[in-house]
Image 1 (spheres, rainbow, N blue to C red):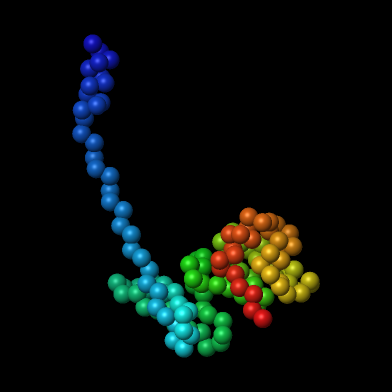
Image 2: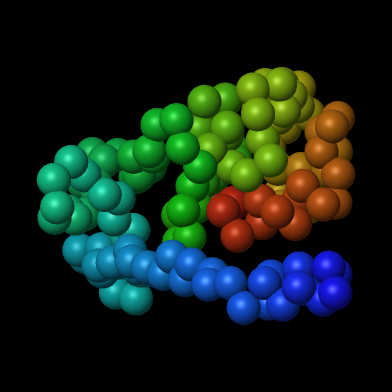
Length: 136
């Protein structure tokens, strides 16, 4: 009788409802002057989202102390060590190794060339592929 009573009380006790998950998508607005290319927006202080201002050079501004978001890319042949740390799976030591390899061996011709850097393997290359570009 004791086990049946415990089982019954566990089966009939009220359980709290799970908290709802709210998804708020980020808005992407087209970049001025470039048809078909979108410039991602980052949340700013306040309730309104504004586009990230375009840099005065051809290199876009990247968020600091964050990782790149979907749609943002980075040229691995011109990026600084700090910018390379924005790539997923790339920390300070790997970013420094990329810059050192680029300086000593020359520019990267393909994304797969990142695998020549010590500490970067095929898994890391595949992880950064959507965020990396090779400029001519």
